[in-house]
Length: 106
Image (cartoon, rainbow, N blue to C red; front, top):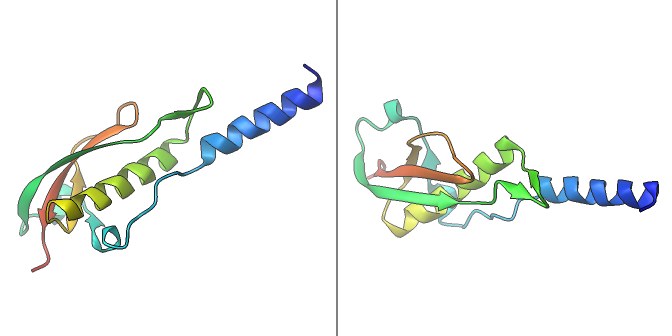
């Protein structure tokens, strides 16, 4: 492979690794991501486990991008179980994260 083709392939792989495929739904826009200390007066309504790709084209995706996608997926999912707030239970592992879902706004 020529040096130019190698550069193009590497640039393409890096741009794919930076892409976001997850979109926040209109209903998900109303769901907030809080810390555990912020939900003391909220009603817990369940849990959601969300997944996104931690790699793209064989390369690890940027941790902030993965976290943003996981938060977006959790916000979208919370709507389905009647929540308006999500709290991550731990750090993501291989693109998977568990959130508790709360109803805080009444």
